[in-house]
Length: 232
Image (cartoon, rainbow, N blue to C red; front, side):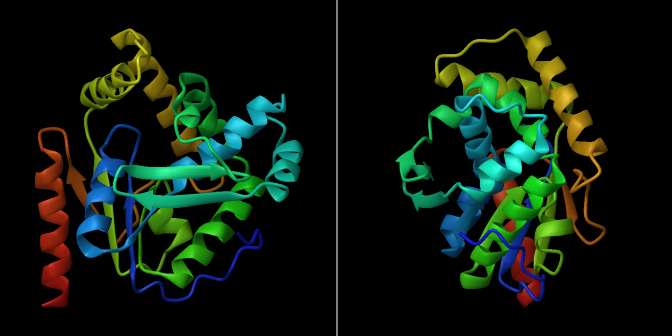
């Protein structure tokens, strides 16, 4: 992947899905991509991969210079399979390792560094130039693909987002108290929304969908209906 950021032009075949942790972005984006035969671009997985590498190499995640230097020597690949996204870090499958609590809690710190984001956005835009993508993250509709054909912002109340995250971790054998999970998500929201570079926010032209009481299929249906109407 190229590390130099490209100039955003017309990403007519990009569909962006932004929102906070636990809003359902990843699951919905994967389904939309599969239905439309688009490439699912998981930006969070890319930041998680770099965060994992930084932790494994003992690099201070608050040291932007060290993180940028590490990113410049890093190769991240995403493979979209029927079983889900496989994340390759320097040729090694680390898909399971990047979902640990330590990596999860550190990723928003790593992703807040302007130098790191510049490199990552360049990689993501390069992928979007090559193929139609469904991309999800925090700033995909505002920074990465500001000219995307379709933009959505998913949200849900805090308690529901915490419950979803707990369920996800339980399936992987990790258990955490509800109060602790709510605290972690609150902190992550604050970091994501208050950072200077690429903060979490709804693009003015993005469609807001509250997923609190909706099933994944209901959210997917709403998005597909919107896209269909646009092309009618």
